[in-house]
Amino acid sequence: MTIAFATCSLLPDGNDDVRALTAALAPLGIGAEPAVWDGDVDWSRYDLVVIRSTWDYTDRRDAFVAWAESLPHVLNPAGVVRWNTDKRYLRDLADAGLPVVPTLWDPDDIPSAWPEYVIKPAVSIGSRDTARWGAGEEDEARAHLRSLRDAGRTVMVQPYLSAVDTAGEKALVFCEGEYSHAARKAQILRAGAGIEGAVRDDPSRGHVTPSTATAAELDVAERALAAVPGGGRLLYARVDLIPGPDGTPLIIELELTEPSLFLGHAPAGAHRFAKALASRL
Image 1 (cartoon, rainbow, N blue to C red):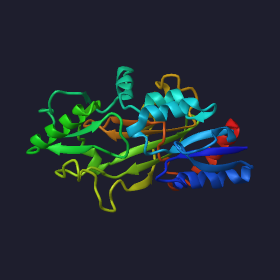
Image 2: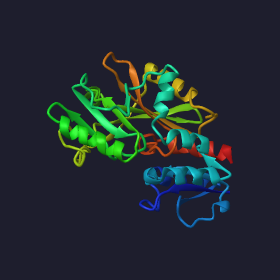
Image 3: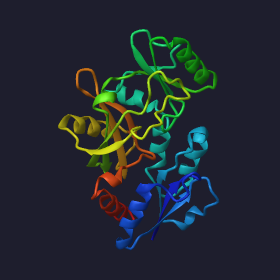
Image 4: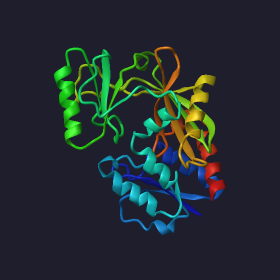
């Protein structure tokens, strides 16, 4: 049996997670190889396609979702991919009573109540077209907002939470609905840098370190997964959380399509996922 780990043309060999999973599957007698999702690939050759580092789909989301829907055996399921590749899913989670970072959707103007805020499109990856704005940057922030709206993109505006700079984001990774491991992600967005320089370019940008989940974080993450429409058993999931002003874990993102699983920070993680894949096959 052979698994395809779907990737993009920028990473034809996949990322570190793909390499770790391929190595963990070999002793189980399961072959695995990277395959570019929009390349000239005979997908019928594979017993299962697992979406991994497909990190170039945001400009072609419809084509990407259609590709996922064309596959007979794909994980996570194509219906989940369609729902999860547009961050408007956060509205569904909020409507379900889950604690989500407050979000203004397609506002006419920038917020006046938040000293710092983040403007980003609902379909994006890796902080692309995302920037952090504050006092004295109103003209630039409005131009950013207008540029996204003029391009027909759904715009999100969220308060910049100070805990990003102190506690950082906590990423909880799940395998087959069960908690596997956690990692801490350091600050990514720079203040006062504008849209072109918003993402930090120093070695500490988004630095990832192993972490552990608290009982409160696990509760929020498990409730979020339970709220996924038609999700069933998800092979993998990553719930990104940050403490709110009162310490309550708030959901930043629920990553169900192509998240980094930070397997390099969890010695047993790759073997856990390999066993899950073997069971699926």
